[in-house]
Image (tube, rainbow, N blue to C red; front, side, top):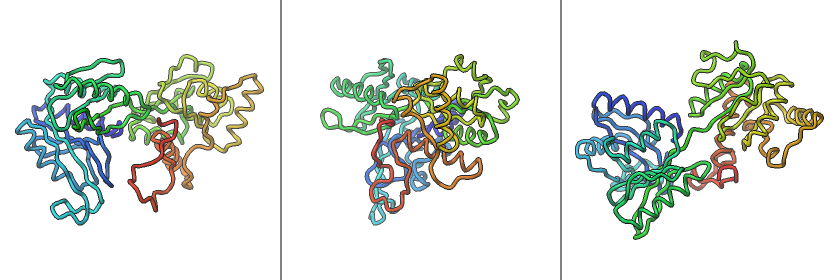
Length: 368
């Protein structure tokens, strides 16, 4: 799930619990073959049948809601298998050619592990939740080493904690089901801070980029020395930084941020590019043709400013996928499509003719 989906689900859950409603979370814990979503996708189901977020394109939701209502009533978590193949005799016959396992559990915030997990989801903090699919209990692990909860089997508990810590160290953590000692299935759900995007420049073409990035769950920062351009009305949901180029030293961008230089002003772009390259970011994009980025680097070199090979490797120019984008909204789509592909390890090409699982792709170094 992306951060925007998690934000919507958690907000609806808080409101429902405040009203005294019962609720369950349905989570995809296993995928074989082709399916619409992958492991870790969640859906909220309330005791009146309402749902928030989706596990599929609409294929499974009605079936899952029925099971979730039973789980809310009984309090007993369940794992349900759904066959999506077209010729399934007893399956759903949806024609996706795969199958999914969905774990459905009633939300009980009196349980310390559940409470800690939902607090991490609310705050956008990194955490891993390990759940034995064939047994009872769960355990939460934080990046700082804190462990909340204990599994009954000491060997499985140690394995779960080790697996959770390892996967929390990945740059793009993903939920996964693994085989635990003794042969049981262990699901490891993961939450990570939302991706961050720093936009240098608050011009007209930054508006759709910031809006679309926020809708996709990004933590958006906009940097510009023109206070009149930096208003919540123009950039809803974004953090606004009224900073002249010489004041950038006071700005501390998130370590996980990707940076995009688009001031449309050579002097500001030059200073912002140098700052972004030295920030340690793995992605620093410059809007415009390749020659513009090279000219900026040449101007910096003339000032005596040089950069390491690792810093220059982060430079992306031109930015975006080649989709023929012209209007600002189209350019924003192109840029964010590239950012998503880059973060998740995909090449950004056409899916047409791809014979395997749609979500399978070689992972490049930046996403590992």
